[in-house]
Amino acid sequence: MAEKATQIPLQVDTGARLSQNLALLHAGSTVSIEVSTPAGQRAKFRTIFIGYLPKQYLLVQFPENSKLGSFSQFIKQGAAITIRGLIEGHEGAILAFVTVVKQTLQIPSRIMVLDFPHTVTLHQLRSSIRIDTQINAKVKIDKKYWQTTITNLSISGGQLNIVNGDKLVLAENKTIEIVVENNEGTGNIKLNAVICNLKKQINGLAFGVQFSDDSKSQVIDLLHQVIIDESEV
Image 1: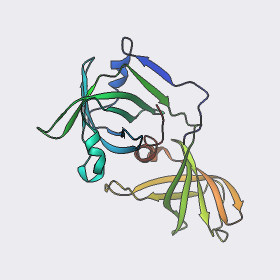
Image 2: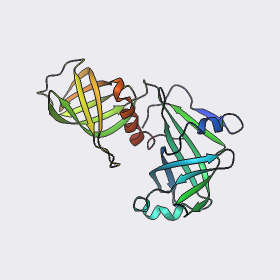
Image 3: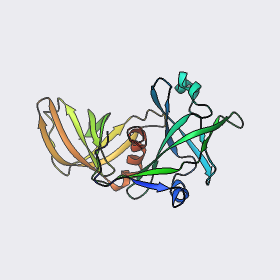
Image 4: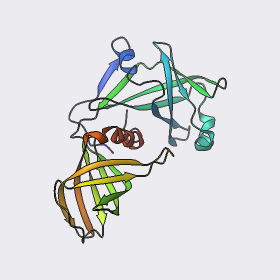
């Protein structure tokens, strides 16, 4: 889960800047939807934000049936849905809001028509705020790949753990490459980084990294995979 920010998330009112901030979520952006059952079960699914008509409704594509499973029966008129999306920018932000299904469409494709929200929440992603993660990855050090786990992540950097990495010879400012397999089937995410600090552990090695500027878009792609599923409205 994300560490608590020192600043209270900004609540945006419909009558003020709601449309302006929703406009930051571009058509075609990846978002997550959270669906609840009457029994209190919850599930999150990744899908596509289509667009909106100010103060009237929003359009979101249905997730794939193969991923929805039995939860598809709960996406119907009157059902409450939580939407989260990552806004790309200098530091980035998560936009989140709760809405209600107005109706569902089958043509031209399976689409959810959602009530225009009364408020949205903007969670700023400051570089100092790190998100706890458990991302399996590979790290290339001196032409050799090692299995690693990314244990926290921010836009500017993160921390890696390597089990049985005692024989590794590392130094600060050493350049490395981190490879994360993309579960969405769109190829691997590769991040260039430099080592910031080293920590010996009982069962291996832990070290911090700072991402290079040319990897920022790839970091945002990785944040798409982990942050919107972990943040709370």
